[in-house]
Length: 123
Image (cartoon, rainbow, N blue to C red; front, side, top):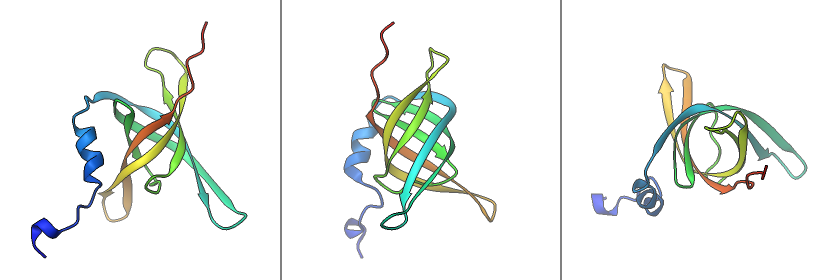
């Protein structure tokens, strides 16, 4: 297969749009909650902490111990840089990359985009 005919491994249209955005380092723990449907009547909830690495307009780069499915929507609690509380966001997994540490340890880089963020409360 000629190189020009090799299908891309990632959604190039999404990566072209996100590459131009400014990234701001934002390293900190984020609580997440994933839901997986195991059958007609069974839902498996799992969660834990991810490490946010940076943020851009509408997106966050996470380091996670488990990988969400592509386009999976999940809840993410992001610490506010100016307040002592966290903000709850509904995010969609856009892409994942597996990173290996040794023979058995895996973590995942996960690019997510924000779908919904509740408005800030008015004091």
